[in-house]
Length: 133
Image 1 (tube, rainbow, N blue to C red):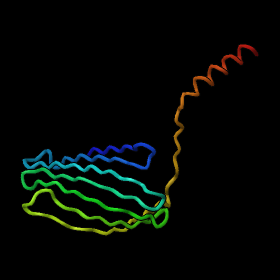
Image 2 (image 1 turned 90 degrees about the horizontal axis):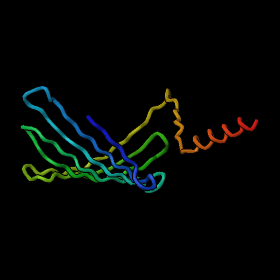
Image 3 (image 1 turned 30 degrees about the vertical axis):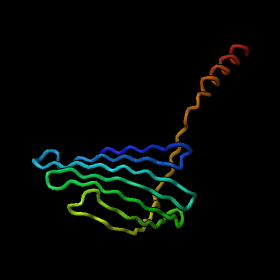
Image 4 (image 1 turned 180 degrees about the vertical axis):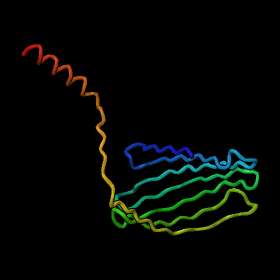
């Protein structure tokens, strides 16, 4: 599986691409993808649209899905979605509700320092100070 996540604009938009290859060493490989666009409306609410595809010798289809999620607190969320298939043999229409709970008792935050280009300027200032001193 290959996963790519991109934050767009002000960061409230997220575009995720999943590419899947399964059973590739067999006579019956299966391939799939999922592309999702998510929008955070505020700290509690978000919505998404998604296209998910399956391709194999046994079954091929494309599913379109839309939904919303509500963040109850920092570790719990509820969500609802509705999905339909693009092909009509068979036609699929279904909905779903879900609950997610994040367990992070052993989580340790990792912060990465991002170089904003100032380090070169600071190094030049330090070099000038040492020459003068």
